[in-house]
Image 1: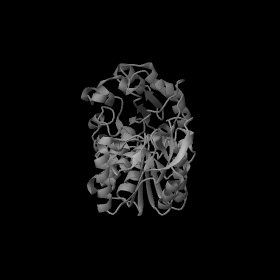
Image 2: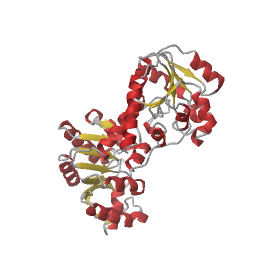
Image 3: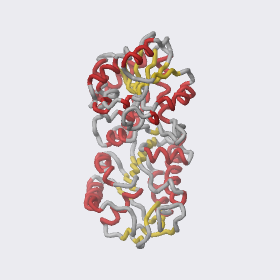
Length: 405
């Protein structure tokens, strides 16, 4: 591990020192951004966070070739074309950006070869070719013809062994680098997993415990407090014999939740569940609302947010933590009547961060929550990788990173 870390640091330093003058530099970015019905971007984070890497290249005379995917198209589907985001990419980068209707073949090569020093071109969606997700070597070889160097800055796709994220690196040997975003992502997560200042608190939320099993297991060796929120709470409560009404529950994982409790005790980790919850008689903005003990939710009602006593308890833990990981909301924050728990939790994390704690937020819903409540600037680092972050937290090696190191 130490050897890999030193190699990772070395290739990052090499990138920052490299002279790209008049060289074509492929940058695998993750511009898989959310679009509304009018093809307008609703969250610019991933583009904004890749800006520094692109600037590093063009400021040193490089010709920047941007590769990305968007969605899961079935062939060449116009709604997944990266042309929809071209204007936004230009605005964020602050430089003109050309666009190519393909990512391989003569048209693509001619478009890249026509670039001048410091220019940027966005290639069409690599997933328009099914070979991309299959990790096809020949497709990766064709992509590699677009550049003299390869830079991976797509943490959100680093857990995929796809042609443009992993296989392509094989064609660049000593000419492949870690981008500044990818570097920052790994350092931030490592700051929790390996270098976190204690006490360390992990807040794991979301609907299903089944999707967070290995994350929780891996974290238990590193953290001091584990706060469980969201729908997965009710699997834990039912396993303890509680009455959860119509709340979401994974019956097949009740026994497993008991195991998590036992593991936490064995490892000296304090596991916290909500004491009280906000309940609704339906999953709706118009639902009737009440407060209930988490162990005695009446039939016809479901737990949809943490209650005031729970928030107070969670806040006390957060305020004595020096490292905080937040993955998953603790309530249905998308519905206003059930957003308070997630909002208050976020505010407590910001308050503690201002006092010197390191806070890391990751996972699509968590990131959406901090943006919705306007507290993004108060978080130490917001990860751009959902699935990639989870797999890294699980202790898995990410193919896109392994290919570089």
